[in-house]
Length: 75
Image (tube, rainbow, N blue to C red; front, side):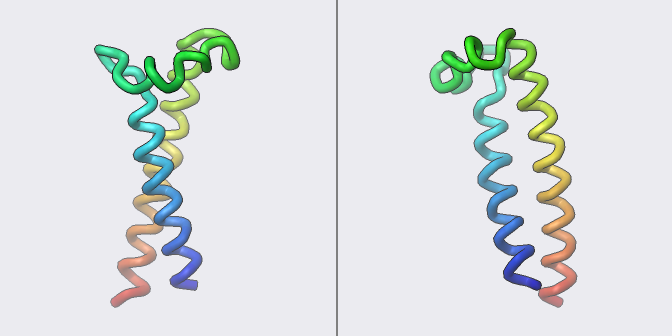
């Protein structure tokens, strides 16, 4: 059981880092360099930002839940 939550936690961490780096900020950052072609795939840029925002919220919730569960299982 602990191994399942640890794997889920690691996937959430890596996914959260990737999603946050892909989000456009005030100066576009990495999202302009990496996901520039995604505009043609997802349509408007606004749609991609919404998708990345939702993914950030979901991955953050998974991160916190797995953190608490792993803390409980380790003690």
